[in-house]
Length: 325
Ligand code: TXA
Ligand code: MG
Image 1 (spheres, rainbow, N blue to C red):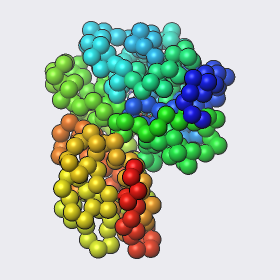
Image 2: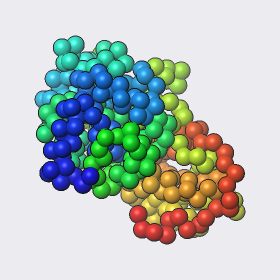
Image 3: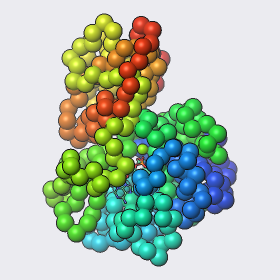
C-alpha cells in the first residue's frame, strides 16, 4: 500500500489491533508491532523465524516517548538531541512500568530505542501513538530490505500490510550504542558513524569477540545472500561477478563509481540481492575504506561472507546491474 495519509492511518489502525505492518525507515524497512501487545510481538518472531531471546528495537515518535520506555540520563539526552530523529539506537535501562511485552527485550533489564527520521515512519508512529517494536523486515539471517518489494517477496503473507515509501535512503541499519554505567559500548556499526558519536561523548568501547552476549542477536553470520563472497578483491576471476567501488573496472555492479560511502551504503543490499540472483559461483567485492559508513558496510560484508552457502548455478549473468537502481 502506498504511504499516503489514508494508508498511514490504516497502518496505525492495524498496529492498534495487534497486526503486523512493514514500514520504511531511513535505514531499512522495519516489521512493526505494538510493543505493549505480547501476541503481536510474538507474531513478529514467527514471521521472521527469529529465535526468541533476540531483543527488538522499539521505535517512538519523539524523544520524550522513547525516554518514557527507557531511562535517559545526561549522555543519552545529549545524543538524542544531536542524532534523533535519525539512525541511532540507544540501549538504556528499561523502565519496568513502561508496559513493554517481555519478548521485546528478551527479559533483559535494558531496552533498545530509536526515533526514526523517515517521514512515513514518523507519521505512522505519531498516528499509532504507541511504542512500536520493529526489527528489520527480513527473514532471520537474510539481507535487510531497503524496498517494499523486498519485504513482499520474502515475508509475503506473514505481514498484514506493507507501507511503500520508496527506497530507504541510508541503506544499512542503525548504529546500536549501549549506555550503561561505564564507557559507551558500540554494539553495531551503522548509519551514524562511530567518529560522529565519539566527537560528542568521547571514546567508545567495543564488545570483545568472546563476549557475544553483550550484543544479543548480533550473530557473526548474518545478512547473508546465497552466493559465497570474496572480500577485498582487486579484480574478479572468470567465474565471479564483481561488486565494485570507486574506479573499479569490470564491475558487474558498482556501489559508487565516485567512491562515495553514503551512496555505497544506499546501494549495498540491493546490489547484493541482484548479484545473488545472477547465481554466479562467487561474488567478489572490491576493498571498501574502513572508516565512517565504510565500517558499517564492511561489517555487513563480513557477516554476509560467513553466512553464505555455496551454490552450483549456471554461469554468471553479467547484466544484473544494467537496469538503473
Ligand atoms: O535500522 C535499524 O535499526 C532497523 C530499522 C527497522 O529500525 N532495525 C533493526 O532491528 O535492524 P534488528 O532487530 O534487525 O536489530 C536489532 C539489534 C539486535 O540485533 C541487537 O543487537 C540490538 O538491536 N538490541 C536490541 N535490544 C537490545 C538490548 N536490550 N541490548 C543489547 N542489544 C539490543
Ligand atoms: Mg535485522
